[in-house]
Length: 409
Image (cartoon, rainbow, N blue to C red; front, side, top):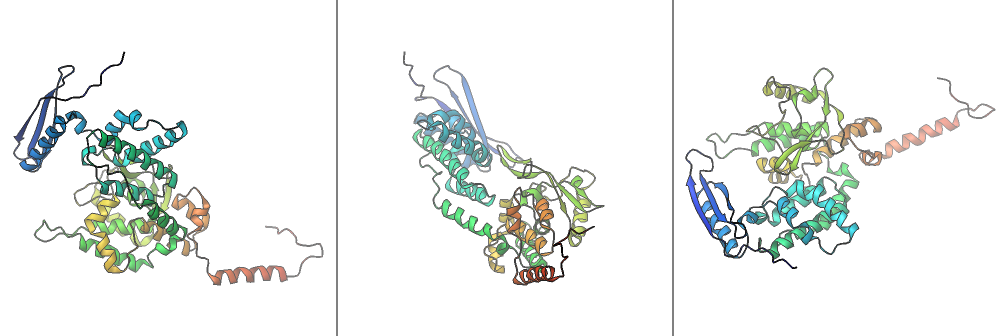
């Protein structure tokens, strides 16, 4: 027997707004309703800064309810909605294709966007997620599968009337991917020229972080510390955010890198580094006073974060960009190409030029493939000439009548 589908048409909704004095978001909007099928009572609520925002929230839910959409569905996050409609959205796919889509959904989409409500998802959020995957050097096929799954879920939300336009259809991302891939072939071209340029960048970012909400337009020196530490340790911003006081060995000046801060369901979270294993990173003498200053400021807690935002929050590359007006600053300095991730390219380039052996540089960088590390080497004509001269000297030396002999060490 075919069962009728349950559509909440004719559902009765009541809404109210409560003012709670002294709260950052004092206007609490609440929706109550009774399910038509089982007569169960339900409610959802959300707080807002202004009463007008609260009214608009109630009106939007009422409008969707009149069109047959349950209020509980209206406030679903992308992860929750995806789980509820996955079979329907992925219908018709072959097993192998579905496996790739689900891997992209679980590994990329849910950590990056899963905590966002479907009804407020927009093109900008999806764009930022895709470009973050590209910057993290996620493979082309994984990005493609993740986007394909996201588009299908977005299309199902549009058909369900939850959204009017599918915001998950991103254009131009493959061109951006090819550009990023071309840049990483020669990451040396992305590096800052010297330490003076790094210091100038850090100072400019601090100056641009002036808080317009304070009378003295207060800046935050911590942004400069983050940038300098990231470049001088060849680390990612998420890894800098994950540093705890206990991770720094001030006797040998070694940083034990064991975690990074990244986006996940429900917000930011700490997890293993990108390479899935920890690594040891040297701390150069020039930045040690700054590190000691931050350790002292962190207090006696060994698990205290070494680098935080001005209010003690965790740092992300997006937070750093917005707080320091990064794009404007680098344009003024003539480094239009410079991304936050290029601070890592800068550090690895400097280390390679300093003569750090390739296998040691690989351990510092956490690269799984030596070929990735080799891209940071500078193949100068002078070094090639020296290599040829060394070979010539070796071959021109008098040989034993019995041919080349093994050296005794």
